[in-house]
Image (cartoon, rainbow, N blue to C red; front, side, top):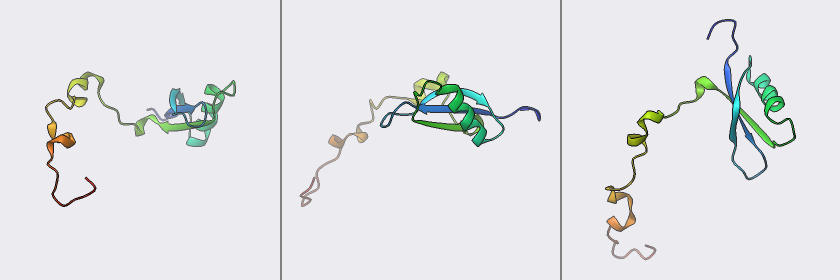
Length: 95
């Protein structure tokens, strides 16, 4: 980032209570307050939002899509993750 460029922010909008926030887009702003106001103006123009989150892009850590195989490896071959792998303890009534 150069000295004359504002930081990049990611905006997340929740359309109504009980739903998850969804990534709406990115914007540049000098601070969090302005980023929040700009996100509101850009991504909720038709009253479709009930909540807006903004976070600086530099603060987000994401997995590498090219490393999907190893990162999201299935649970096959990992029987220890299933309760059937363990034996029931004697004398424990609630198991």
